Image (cartoon, rainbow over the protein chains, first blue to last red):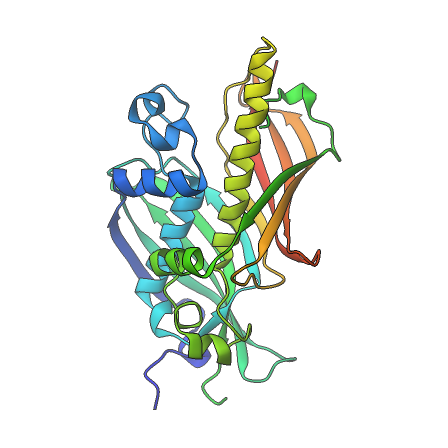
Length: 150
Length: 158
């Protein structure tokens, strides 16, 4: 009846391609103005002389983009119910204006909930790199997914 | 971080960072841009979900921490500069760990954020810099923990 992906549709080793996604200058500045207004996220001249070496996305912005790409790959057409958290988010190198991100969202484990029938847990690792292959961000975490039988 | 040099961090020190108010509008804007999934976007699906109504995206609640942190950091640096004191360069963060969202955040809630220093150490690999580890938390008006994570940031040594 429903075309949504459910817990049963995810399995260990499953891989979803992410991107390519170009991180634009205006998007970097707009996010930074709201959540991370520091000079190296707002101003190209100030950013050039900073440790990041150029106008760079806030780590929270690159994390948000990662989640969005996972939504586009499959989560937006799934019965996802939320997440209790993420084990780790690594900001491996700066995401600069014009960078083209692509990578993989890989399912690492699935487990039905013992305490909550109708719900399963799905663990994943997602990695994104820039156009030159340089690793940019890696996220490891979990989400809750509705079971098809419920 | 907070305009302090590496040697000035004491484990256990708490920085109160102020609050960020989540509204129906900013929750919708963030979720539309970064978390367009049914339980964030659709009222009926939210009602049938784990939270019972529309809640903020988890990383939106983390980004609210950043908003408060940057305001506090900028203010601390301004105060220190006004005294004529030297300021460390702002260092990057290699990432975060143990991100937890134990309770949802709903429209109308103001979340109060704080960060507690856990450890600081010099870096053998990077002369003149060290790493400060801190735990950041957000609490709602009832004092319930809604978000926590462990952060790390590079901090210049004096």
